[in-house]
Length: 278
Image (cartoon, rainbow, N blue to C red; front, side, top):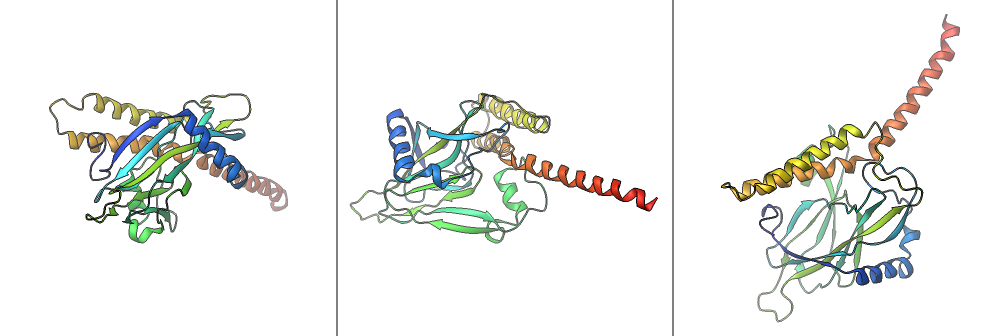
């Protein structure tokens, strides 16, 4: 994990297991026992080309088991989106707490108190936090204490962190905090469109792609006589920029649409008023 991430941001251990059967079991529990399809009304995922109607279709089979020993943490971050195709993408992050025999080790969610002074599109986590006025003063914090068997669902663009557990060194119980992380997935209901970008999305799509490719190129040269830590930081920041540009969509398109309607209404009023003034 240390070679994949900047250890100042994340130093816990993780294993990924692909399990279709377990994914179906979790989905059945969510769908029938907890009626998730009735609880959540907005099924449009984040990202480019999300026009049309969507429906929930299951859970990502990639099960990420995260283990946090004493002093291990995952600093404020946003989760990446699972997107096997343009017509199937993850809508929500899903966390299942597998134990609770420790102190602290909370999941903390951060919600901005006000709008940023400038656009946050394409910023790193550090830059975004600064744009909102800092983690302490610019955000409302909601802390969730882990409870074994409990589930937390949230959208990928919510800033959150996993704090280090306080574990009794003399305890005979499990000496780590363990969670399972996966995703709730949605699928386009209508005719498949893939990534059918609109003219308003193309520039940001290419910017996103360029950041991603630059990160990959650095990653390929990761072990060529350079400081691995510096490279991990550079790569992580490039991936963050690439990831967070799409997270501004479709919200940006909605704002542009609303502004267009306002402009049309103002233009109409002006046209109606001109004859009287003339």
